[in-house]
Structure formats: C-alpha cells, structure tokens
Length: 170
Image (tube, rainbow, N blue to C red):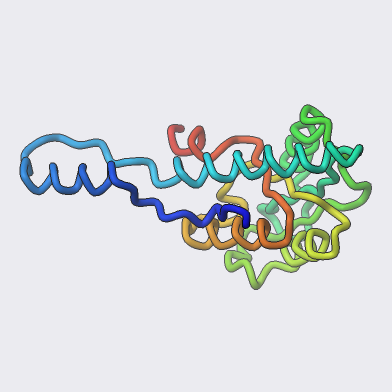
C-alpha cells in the first residue's frame, strides 16, 4: 500500500502549539507554513516515482503547463522555465505537449489545458507535468492537495520549478 500525499497537515507538534497558545495568549507566534508538509510529501513521492521509472531503464516523460495572461497568447517564458527545469532533471519533455489555459480559468474543471495534462497522465503517455509554481495548479491549498492525490492515484507527478516553501517565503 502506498502512502498518500493527502496527509493531515496537523500533527502532535501542531496540537502542542495550540495548547501552548491557549495557556500563553500574549506570546508572539509565527504561524506554521501550511505548504511545508505538502511540499515534503510531494517531493518525496516525486523522487520515489522518478527512481522507479529510471529502474525500468527510461527517463520520465513530462508535459509542460502554464497559464497565459492574455487569452490566446502562449506563455513562452513560463513554458521555457518549465522545460529548462525538466532538462536539468534529465526528464524527456514530450514534443508538442505543452498545455496552457488563460489565467482567468480559475477552477480546475474549467481548464481545457489542465484536462489535457490529466489525460496525458491518465493514459500513461506522460509520467508528470512541470509547472513554475504551485499557484499555477491552484491557489486553494485544498484543491492543490486534491490534485496531488489525483496524480498519485494515476501514477503521475507534479514538478515545480519554484518549490512551495520557497514561494511562500517570497
């Protein structure tokens, strides 16, 4: 049985911090980064899946995904950054498999480009997708977590050029 990236974001330390906060309400606290556990689980799964693919004697095949500011315009800088990241990882970028959506298509189910990515993963033509940031997948942490679970269930991965924790610190 494989581990899911949909782990609860609350652990014993979070519960201890909450109890401490109730006992000492005047202390200054820095909130925990909600993306930290998700980032660690995503990266751990990605590394494990890539290693499995490589043990079969091939490099992972990836597609690229980006959002365009203007509908009909190709977000070339984002796609280029994703392609460079994939090449640095020695992944095979699928020819002609760059999917895009306009930035206004917020909901995952309303994005034909994201549907194209999922179809490539579901059918096994791609092992993963490379995007610049987690916000490209979704700005909602629960929706982002759901997408990670979907990809894991379909033996695919989401790779980020800029990891979640770096994005949050910026």
